[in-house]
Picture 1: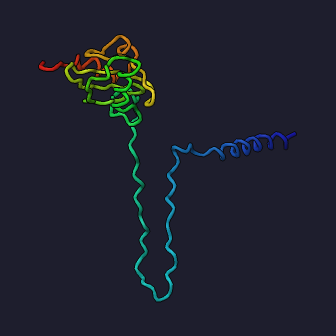
Picture 2 (picture 1 turned 180 degrees about the vertical axis):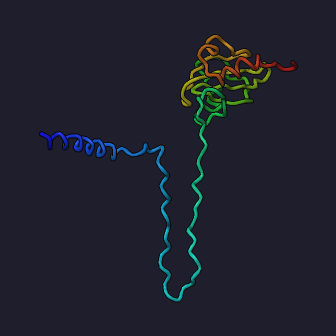
Picture 3 (picture 1 turned 60 degrees about the horizontal axis):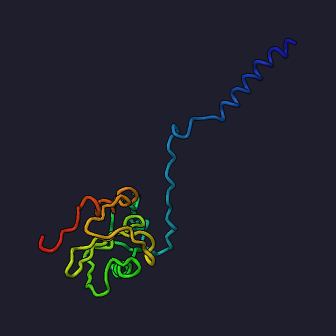
Length: 176
């Protein structure tokens, strides 16, 4: 038993040392590893002995894309309806504009999220503000008039549209 009594503490000590040896320092505390070195290809006989310089290439340009919500700011519509599509909507089923009135797009359409804001010059009438929403091919009329800051626009419209429709105030009429 004496031999066993001496072997047990030694075995325990060897076990503890073996277990702890595998731990090492955490990765964030360890020394940084050296960067790989680049070796040049051997120079053929008779060639210049100037050291080869590695070719450095710039990274490709990165397109900057906004990370904020698309509804925060109204910008020119890339995938929204055209001004003519908005005019067609107002002359069509909405019945806001008669067919014989001359209309010209003054501003927009400006898009924020899936909403659009357009300002139209209507010959012989006040400027007409239009708020629509939905897809480019089939926008839906939300409101049109000289003051388009309606409850629907204030409650559910994106910030970019609310800024245009509500904070700018009503459109000024001719001679104002």
